[in-house]
Length: 94
Image 1 (cartoon, rainbow, N blue to C red):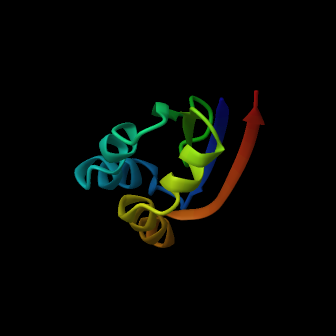
Image 2: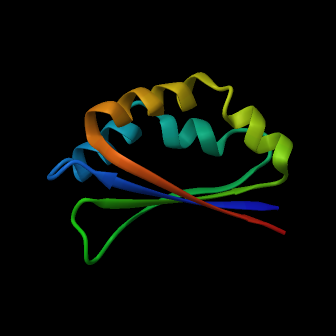
């Protein structure tokens, strides 16, 4: 199993709009529906109003690779240009 903690450092005041755009475009639900996906959930930071955490769990490396080829993954990248200043990815393999 592979766990990814994706920390989005959003542009000031843009976190909620970013999460709304993700949900309205169905990026979260499309990712959850992928083969090999175990978890795909967003969490709001209690301390930083501009930080958003995405926790992803995938069956294996192949599932992660396939996820990166999806249209909704590309769309998330496009949305980040408007809403996100920095992205930090922590990967844990088990």
